[in-house]
Length: 184
Image (tube, rainbow, N blue to C red; front, side, top):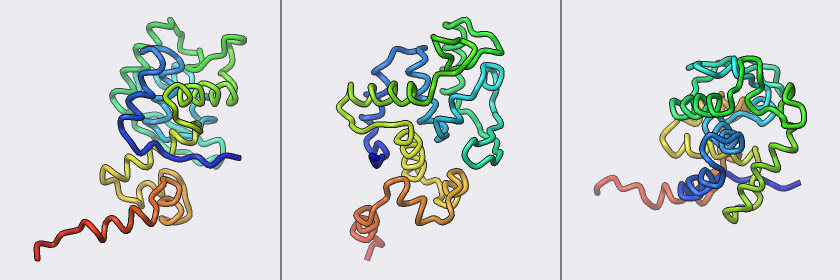
């Protein structure tokens, strides 16, 4: 089993988002993972009616069975709208529908292949759906989101678990002591 890491360079994320064409299922899958921090099993379960023209969505996490409300980032809502229009999807269709059986979503393994392939294309290995989730947490933290909020989002038992999960290491902690300047 490979350990996954968050993408800690914005240029990696930008390159990743350029691998697949705009308004494609594959690109939307990457963006959805990066902008929501949801597990892949939760992402794949959405139908058009759950997301299209919605600002907030309800998610019942498959792993924990807990419900939460999630705000959809405006850029993600725009991507969903463009994708739904381009694909001609109907309200009952799965967002990430299977080509083999359009009445079902793609399988988790297929989603992992799409994400892993995108990582391979930019030389980022291993890249997984879990990497996207961790990347959401890492960049939220780096942009000043309180670790206790991230702990709640990820439903972790402690802040230490969340810090480890999003890739904040002792090296990052040491950097704080090295760089904080109090002016004396």
